[in-house]
Every structure is written in C-alpha cells, then in structure tokens.
Amino acid sequence: MMDCSEIERRNLIEEYLRHRLDDSIQAEFEDHLLVCGHCLAEVEAEERLRLGLQGLQARDELPTETIPQAAARRNTQAGSLALAWAASILLALAPVVWLYQRGEHLEQRLMLDRQQATVDAQNTARQVRTLEQELDDARAALDAARRRLSEAQAAEARPPETGIAELRRRLSLVTSPTVGLPVLHLSAVRSTDQRPAHRLTLSNAPEWVVVIVEPAGTDARYDLRWLTPNGNPLLTRKGLEPDAYGALTLSVYSPDLKTGVHRIIVTGRDSANDVPGPSQTLQLDVSRPDAAR
Amino acid sequence: MTATYEPEQLSAWARRIEAGDSEAETELVQALGRGLEFLLRRWVQDPELAKDFYQETFHVVLKSLRRGALDDPTKVAAFVRGTAQNLVRSQWRKDQRRGVHDNVDEIPIEEPSGTPWEQATAAEDRRLVSRLLSEMPLERDRQILYRHYLAEESKEEICRRLDIDDSQFALVLFRARKRFKRLLEDAERKGDFRRWAKERAIR
Image (cartoon, rainbow over all chains, first blue to last red; front, side):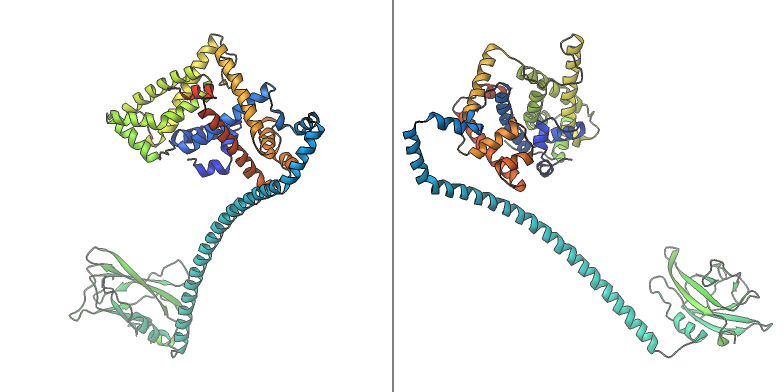
C-alpha cells in the first residue's frame, strides 16, 4: 500500500496532476488520497496553483514581470531623472539586497545541509547496526572455534586409546536422564566356532532400545543379528529382558561380520510417550586386534 | 482536517456497517467524503455533476457494505474509488451512446465553458493570478514558477537559466510555490477567489 513518504520520494503529486501516472499507480495514489488528509491537502493546493497558472498560459495573460525582458522594457519607459534617482537608491540598497539574497542562499544551503545530514545520520545508524550484528556473529564464531580448539587440545593430551578400550569409554558416556538411554559396555568375545564376535552389555536398560549396526561411510547395512541370550532378536520388545541388576548382555554374532570401521547407532525410547529419544552414534573398528579377542 | 485512516480503521467501519451500525456509516462518509469529492471533481470537472456522483457512490458503497459484499474490508478505499469510477464511466458511456461524447474511454479533463457568470469570474481569477505572480517579491520565484508550470521547461534547462544547482531545484521550486500559495490564500480570504471557493463548496 502506498504511503506519504513514497509519494514524496517519487514526486507522485506532480506526476498525477500532469496525468503522467500509469493506471495502476494512479489508482493506488487515488486510494491513498481517499484516506490521507495530508496528501489530499497537498494535491488540492498544488492543483489550484497549477490551474491558476495554466489558465494564464491558455489566454495569453502572462504577467509581464515573469518575462525576463519585462525589466528592460520598464526601464526604457522611465525618465532619466527617475533612473538616476532609482540608481542612487539601488546603490544605497545594494548591500541590503545582497545581504538579503545571501541570507536566502545561506538559508537554502542550511536546509539542504540539514536534509543531507539527516540522511547521512540514518545511513550511518544503519551501517552501525549492520557492523554490530557482524561483530556479534564474529564473536560467536570465535567462541565456537576456541571451544573446538580446546576440545582438540584435550583430546590430543589424552593417552591414545584403541579399539574396544576407546569404544567402551565412549559407550559408558551414553546416558540420558530424560529418556533412560542405556549405558553400553562392549567387550570382544569369540563365538563357539572361533569367529570374531562382540558382546554388548546394556546396564540401566530402559524398557527397550533400537540398536543398528552399519558400516561407516556407506548406506548399506550389515545383515547383523543382535540376539538376546535366549536367541530372540534384539529389536523386539519381548526379547529385551534386563536381568535382576537392570543389565542386559547381548552378543553380536554373524558370519557376515567383516573387518573395518562400523557405525553403531543406539536410540533410546521414551517409554512414557513411546517415541524415539536421542540417538548416539559410535564407531567400532573390528579390524583392531583387541576387537577380535 | 488532515486525518489519515489506517486499513484497520476502515475494516472496523466495514464490520460495524455490516452489523447494522448507522453511526459507522456516518463516520465512513465523513472520513472518505472529502477525498472522494476531490476525485470526482477532478474526473468530471463539473461541481454539480460531481455532487450527484458523490451521493450515488456512497449509496452504492453503503448498500454493499451492509450486506457484507466486500471480501477484504481493509480495501474499503479502493472499493469506494472503484465504485465512483464505474459510475462515472457508466454515465460517460450513456452520454456517448446519446452522442454527447466521442471518446468513451476518456474521462474529460477540459474545463467546461460554463455560464456567462462563470466565464466572467474565471477571467477575473486569471487576472488575479497574473497580479499575484507579478507581486511576488523575488524574481527567481516568478521565473521558476513560469518556467516550470507554464513553459514546462526541463529541470536542467531551468537550473541553467537560473544558475542554481540540480540539488537546489526542488527546494527553490518548493519555496516559490509556498510563497505563491500564501498569496493565493490571502487573496482568497479577502474574497477574491469566488469560483474556487464555490467549487470547493460541493456539498
């Protein structure tokens, strides 16, 4: 919707009175006139002035004083004595006139300077706001970078961990007070036919969990079967039976288990709402010597 | 009276009118009346005819608002303007069919010749404008008004002739216009502008 500042900025009053607006803009402008008394008053005054002046033009009734030659014509009609008298008056008044015109000029300049200063101030305020925003963003980025650096330095300072030891440490951190995500412990075992297998122990086990194992870096999932001790698939509610201490021991056993880095995704369930809780992704390097022992 | 009405205010009026509030009708007419009066006078260039269209427009608009025919109540202003425009165009087409006008799509912008009395007063007004223009104390004011409004010289040409900067043009014109309007208002207060005063007294 059109507003007063747009009308002033685009000089729409004059364009309207000169019938130079496109139909759509004219309609918008006239809609604004209906609801804006200020702009309406401006248009009315401007129209009166325009009609009055154009009425003169149409009927050759121009005031002679508007024509530059008028002054010369008037001078020739005056007597020489009057001219001399007028000249002396003019000479006497010249400084006054000069000062008046100078004052007028300075007043105009002052008004223009004020307008310019207002615009400059608005632009500067806008730039300051932008710079402040950029500064905030930069500070946030710097804080994040510092955090990452300190984490990296802390990780570097820790003694190197490999295979199961590292995974065990990381799994033990998987807790969730709100949804009861289990703490996982992993240990390497051998299956009865001496193929590598992994045992996953869940203490603080919730009602049930979903565990997915897939090779890292690919979309394909292993056809691994996570079985409970009694042979039921892990992913069924029925098969997940914590023991008397709230712990659940699971074995990973699969002839398809290959060496390499695997991703283990553990998702707790919010038993109150029966919706998925937060997930934790861990990596297991099966090729490590301790992973197969 | 230079009030400005927001779309929310117009929308509230529309809802009240639909609910049967006759006071809201009066308020709406008072709010938009002056603007509509101006538009109609400008479109039809005849105060008496404009007065008829003014009544007819509000008659149609209020009838529609009472039965809630306006989909978007915030667009009451556009609805009023559109209704008035349709009525004027419709009348114009009827006149055209009767052979009054030649061009059906053009709303007349030329001033009608008027009665002898009106012609006499118009001539008197022109003389007054001529006198007021010549009475302006600053030659530059006279020059810029003459060149801008009458000679329709370009901004660049006027700046060159009057030796002013491009950036000063708007301000110089604004000040000249303001001084001339003041002279006009003084003359009007003294009762010199009968025709314009009569035209404004449309209702």
